[in-house]
Image (tube, rainbow, N blue to C red; front, side, top):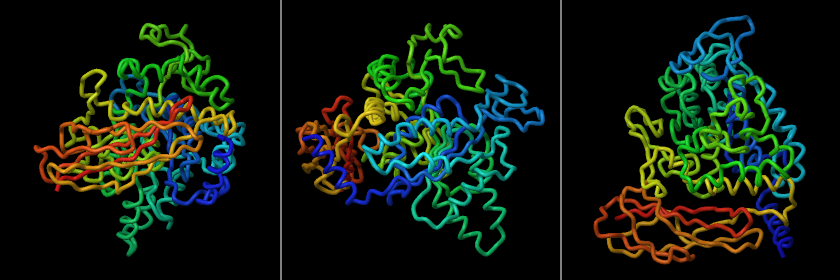
Length: 510
């Protein structure tokens, strides 16, 4: 039965418009990655390759940051403009540079499992296509944006093309290569009759996701000169999924991040791509990064003292940047409104700089979600709350590298039976209805729950029959006109690594 359902799924996918691996499927979000090549970038990239079928990938660009730069090869000394890095490393000719080959090397490993991934989705991009997207950007020094590079030119061309829809530019390191691209556009068009139209076009098109300020180019060049570019500025929310996760993440989530989980679900019997994923004490050194010792507990016993065990998660600090764009497949609807909260975190729009959505900003107080495990409001929890779902999804996709369709798990498809925006008066009964199908024929578990923090009504409502397809709640008497309730339909299958998808209903009091 599962084989028949799998075949039906592929037929339906084909009829819906699945294309060959080198013809990008219409409707997928355009995404462009810049990376400084730290271990967390590498882990995030390895995971990203398993999700490369979900995006219209436009570019893979090496860039620099305050933590990683290549130097100019002429012995020029450089001191970071970031106080923490300056005091830690001082004056240097280069800093922890991991080279401009590691993405190619990982794609070679992807090539070894590519045919098997196609069994699960024939729109996975070919290894040759992915390699064709790689460019070297501004890598010589932190924040260097004076030189025109292949990477900056690629970004410029993409921002100026006539293809519809936003381009999601990912700053896993510094923003300097993006800044150089924007500066090149400015130099070409400013002062011409086309400048205002070009400026508006680029400002409307680019959506930038920054993980920390890893150089000064965003605040010193991009924001003053391109204030209309929508920018998500994430300073603290990835921390529970990064180096300090054992101290920050709820203990209940450790089972999805510790060495036992990675040994069972990722590192072994999942093919050569996943075997390359970096974990604590696994013997894999990051070439060029002399300042890391995660690979050997004998070199760094402090990791054991902090509670780490072999194969523990090191970090995926930058992964929330592309998880934020994955929303269109997951159903949380946060990709267009970062205030909704989702896989990439939850953010508040700056009034001083309306193009900026941030978790911490000049006029944005630290964004927090309530962590029910610790009974505390926590600045990492808006992203951390999705860890069980994310890790189960990762584990299922890792199996796609080695298993056929019949013997692997695939996510349910969840739909609402009514619009995702509803209006209701005080005292009204809001009826909620959804349905789901599963390509593997798995049993499905339904759960309706209120995501309180994105709504303007600050208290919880009582949801009747929350574990069924049909649920309801009464708009409370203390609600005010204009108040909003965010209700999530969460559907999870019964597979080995249970997979979850969502739909969000926003109810507004009228």
